[in-house]
Amino acid sequence: MIQQTLLLGYTPLELDKLIIQSVETSLSISAESEFIKIGEILNQREQGVSIIEKIRSLGKPYYSSFGDSEQQIINEIITFLEENNFYLSISQFEQIEKFASVIELDISRYEKSLLEYMLKTLEPHYFNDLNVFRAKLRKYPDLEAYLEEKKNQYQQTLDITIALRKIINSNTQSISPWLKVDIEFLNNSTIDEYCQWLQEGHPDLYLMVRQFLDLGLPASQKLEQAIRSLAKNRKLNKIRAKFIYNIDIDNLSNNEH
Image 1: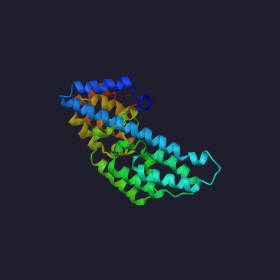
Image 2: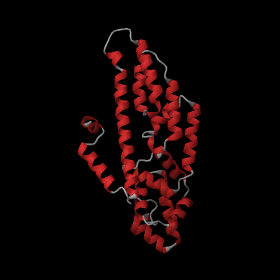
Image 3: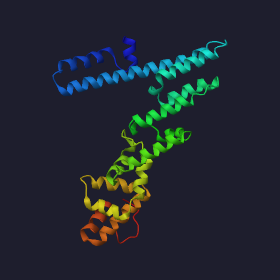
Image 4: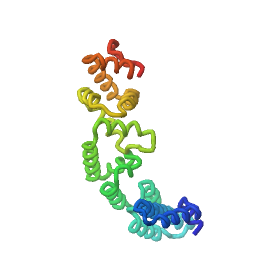
């Protein structure tokens, strides 16, 4: 039991502490919710450990003998996929593909069903690398079209603030899986739209604009042009542009922000 809990990333003492805290505060709705969350995390980690162990065991008939074990390997791979396919990550499926390729076993139907399941049931942030995911879908045009539909749906949720925040956070823990879509959205926004965005204002506008200008995107140039446009219309905006963002409208371009 101790060995299993260590594999799951918890020591027995940490587990006891979590359970005691949850029981002692069982009358609290938030504590009950936290207890359920702890249980889900433990289940997911335990399931993950189990999957890894099962994948490792698939290679044993291949590595441990020169005997005629081809049919055994086929049976074990098919059984494993029938039972666990939807629990796999893309990288885990690729490991199984390597075993299958040795005996020329085609498991593409399982790959397609896994990709389809991911597309239709998981949130975008589960796709750790959207480029890898998209490359996999090239073999399945119907699923590639479905991803394009999800991309279009995602674009409908964007505005300049949302897209910009996701790009700014791309170097932190909150990585946007649709980063290229976010950038494309900003690059396709017009100078007039940036003028409107600047005029609407935001509590974090100063920080967002400074970071936006430093991104060096085509959209950054449009933003600077929007600031220059607004600065030409009002003296206060001219002062804002020059002293807050170091954009002097008397100069054609701005080299430092």
